[in-house]
Length: 295
Image 1: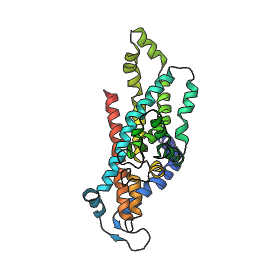
Image 2: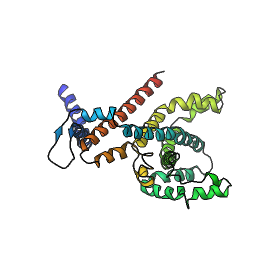
Image 3: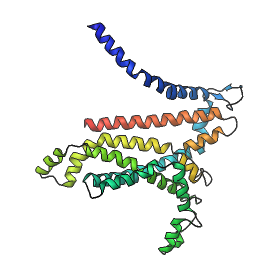
Image 4: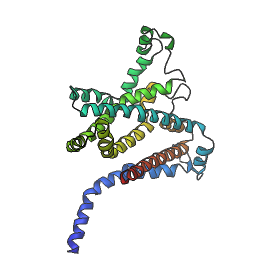
């Protein structure tokens, strides 16, 4: 009996072994290797690697203000995305879940932006934001508020928010699809029972929809944060990190450090710190969702 049980356990592990090997090869091993390189001063090409211990990490926390500015930029775009993108996605998912007319068409339309390449989206919105012949300035002028027209991506006051708007437009669709799938998994009998008990639309939303949707909300929030904090292609295609460093984000800062001469080890240290921050955020959110469910 014991031998049979052991064979069953081993066979189960064999099924997941290929996935574990792939994960270790393409995720765990590179991360360990990046951490090893972060302990060196190295240009990434020459065989001379100078071991400097944790000096790169010390520089990150004591001397590199540009890195933390890039973190703030990513945090600002993430905050915009969490509030406006996911808020609008939830409202429209609720509307489509109520089987409004043309719901299938809306689903297709909303899911179009996420499938477009970030570079293509960036080029389209570059034209919209252009200060000379852009569509946005054209419509502002037509509406009689042409004094607001400007070179949106070249102005330090508006560039970061403009990038955030494009990111929200592009990522809105997948949040909508996940939330809609979560809403449609809720048994309709629960809403009917709540209606029999005298609950209105708002009470049903608060007492039925929200509690059952918490795991979905957590998933959407985690994916939003991870996706936004790692934004890269839109930055490159829209601003390249400029004007100055006003739209630089962690990924572009890491790549800029790699291109800065003998700083591959320093760039690896930035990557390690960034990866640990993302892991900490994800872990905190998962633990927080467990506490909410227990309550």
